[in-house]
Image (cartoon, rainbow over all chains, first blue to last red; front, side):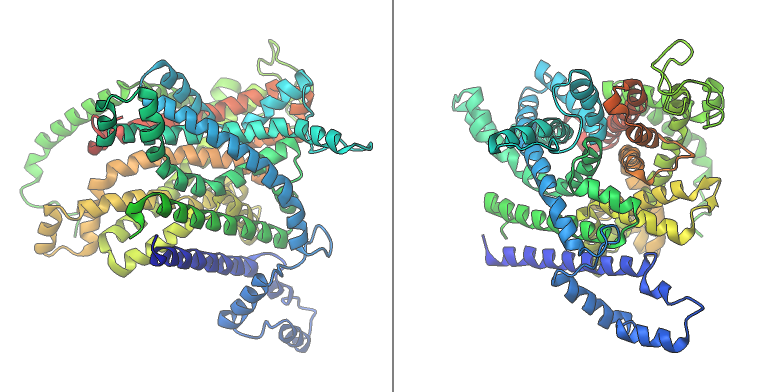
Length: 322
Length: 317
């Protein structure tokens, strides 16, 4: 892979992050309770306002001085203080909630990739077959369901009805638990939320993988492999599948933003103490600094995921290295 | 100007109408001949009728004061879909939710498609620096997690225009959802339209128009737009599915309007009332099923349209 290709993608990723920070800056000027608005109080003397504005650097022009100052403090990890969690830096609040979300999405994403790609490959390979009809219909239905629409019936059936799994939360409160017991408890709490996230994703991945494999199937090298007399399963496994996987790399990375956003709703349903639940609390309390930090974190992660996908794609497919 | 009829074309009007009519018939025939197209149209027809005349079927929207049932009653003869925690009839709420969800979806789709098509056509036709700048902006919106951006934008916009404001009788809380969905989801449409414009603008009739002295704006309106309108229609239908999906998600998260319950808002109420943990399935199934059916129908219809309208796709799939 040429250094030029990597450099170009890196520059694109950095420019996107700069744009995200700039957008965050603009939002910061618009939001209620911004310093610009606080100084509109008629009871303050002009001298006091001028002194305060100078103290906080508001007398300088918005661009470039204020924007640069904002970008520098963002780069240093200073995103301000939470309104709801009084005085706590938002970075700490967000960092505490990121763990459970990564756990939930990580496992859900892994299951969905394995099952979705397998299902899509099988459906597309025998297009119009029984497997395709059932698999594709199910995929389309799950694709049309928001995560919480999948999660709510799961709770009703498996938690409220059958009582197999807890209805909400990440751990059972109280009681001293040994490490093994604690892990089992976490696992029990994970089953339903992970199922909801995985089911929501399987639909999308399976549909995309299906069309990718349908496209690959008509390629000449597949005909060649068949003509050589290779068994059908081997043609699928070592000729069609790896090539059909290529576009999926990008799609999975681009989808990451939607996955995180969707996980927000799954977390609400299962009362899962991650970024999603935090987002809703921040929204209810109109905790703008916190909302901004969450947006920044998710947006930057998505940009990084896209960058990683571009690199992986360039490594896998020689045609895009130019 | 561009709207004046060109001499010699008016007397061809009759002939043109008949060919258009025949083309339309074969188009509808091909669309309804496909399972996905037919299923999509039937489901959407059902929900459109409900959305147009909700009061005819279930009477006016029940409020807290006009509710007649017991709280959280399971389905019975009097209340076939059961009641919510305030004793409101869920059949009534779900039917009225159709209008709210679909109107928001429709308005958001219009904004999305207008922005997306304009950006796509201008970027594709003008090219050069303009194309580059517009596509970088598009890529930016493509990468951004739109729902998360919507979560920040919605309260800010609401604060700027005020919660009590109204436009065309739609309350600002709902309007904000429409604007936010529109502003954050046009990027895909722009990309799709642009790539089609790139091939259309190389065709002979565009050169011909340029040679006889048509300006850029006129060529885009009269020659490029009619040739990508098929794609715009297919994209609109697919966008509608995304818009209803996003509206449901945003309303569920808590950005909806309790006074105008969309399906997402009903599900939000169900979640707040603890319906899943209580096993109150009748509170969740009707609105959830409605959302899934409508999103599914739009997706099926959009894919069918994409195949039928896109000549390149003929014989594939």
